[in-house]
Image (cartoon, rainbow, N blue to C red; front, side, top):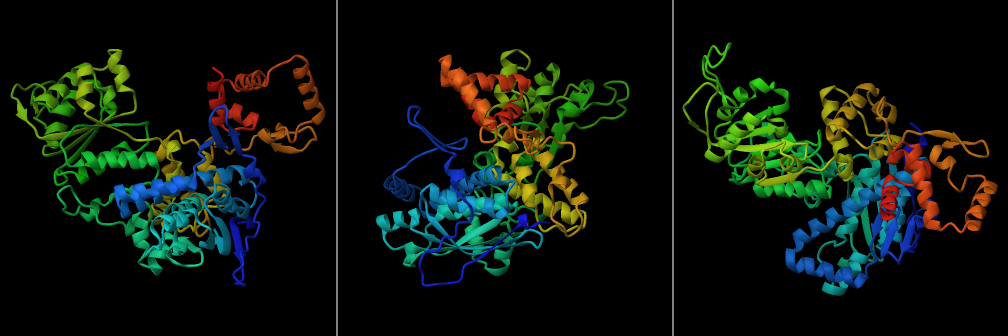
Length: 586
């Protein structure tokens, strides 16, 4: 453990004058803010931004309150702020991940000010990863949200800086890899001289102040989604209002927009008998979604039966699905129920549905249409009452168009599709998943770890996760096993053979210094004479700037054998920036 995993700031109370210590120079942040008025775009790093009148934001907020009501508006703005804070934490680690934790932590308040929301004054900050300490107290001056509320509605009865409090929770949770809840304990909109916020780990709030449960509720899009500690979640209830058995209380974990959208759809369809098609890459958690759908449905008291269609030999697939009569084939010494019969009055989950052979597809279509099946070797039709939930990691629509999958079966399965996003598109959820898996496997293996180091969080937030949530789960279990008991989880405990986006590729710059390859070739470190020569030759040849940029990008992609991530690192930009610029030049 090094000082890089500690932050300590304590400002003594004074005469009330604003005191905003400069934690870190913000020129690196300001330099990432780009205006492209000819294209109608503003960029902060690779994220597109929006310049909005404060008065327009106030009107939007008022319209949301009038349309959705106070609770729904507060929940929406809080989750919006959480997502923004989580994204800015990733930028903080990208820009200052190799500096101290204090420098990275300062990005949150600085971006909040740069984006026009509020000026942040640190009062007390005590963070020590090794000891599991996290306490942040700050003053907010001239809050945009407080001003908007005062102008539209006058003095409020409760704190109103909902989006900003969500931002602080999201930024700290993502930066430190554990759920951190911020609460606004004073608000200018209620008559206080300024807004005051306090942030602590969720479990410490819950131990000290039951009122924190109310604030946590606004981060949860659905009752079955947990954004903090599983043990504090509300009892899960079925579609008819009855509580689900405590043994089945396996909550979903997440708060990102894509995850929230999938959960909303799950809740919408849960009380019906509609066939559901879960779409998504391997490892995103499609079976967990299917199990949650079953638990929320009116069939929760019935069986949940799962079958991985790709794991069953093709010649046995029909027997597994529909059952077999005695003597149907050599070795069938007795009659046996198939998965459909075993799932009667419950839910049948068919994973990797795209691997079904043609005969099984035809029988599955008939079962869905007629609600009856025939066992292999039998002739009697058997009525079934089964809800089918299918899942696939392939494009079934394309396969149907190409004749590789029955189009009529696809339409029957595609009644209510739900897209489960890959983990790289729901990075806001990584801190919550880290806490969840660390607690789960810490208890399973009898070990305790206070948290994750600064460089571990940086590596985890920048990794691409080809194996999605399943891979993250395996990484955390490995780290729990490898790390000494009582020590924080570090990068070397997580990554061994995996290629992390933060793996340093070292190179020599022109002065002989060893730097990461992207930095070693960046203009700030390159040989000035060489750059001058290149510029002069380009100007002499009247080469347009766009053509020069395009040539550099294409050459980087060629040298990287088409690997955009590697090419982007060589150019000193992000993969998203490279992909966007290449696409723009087409």
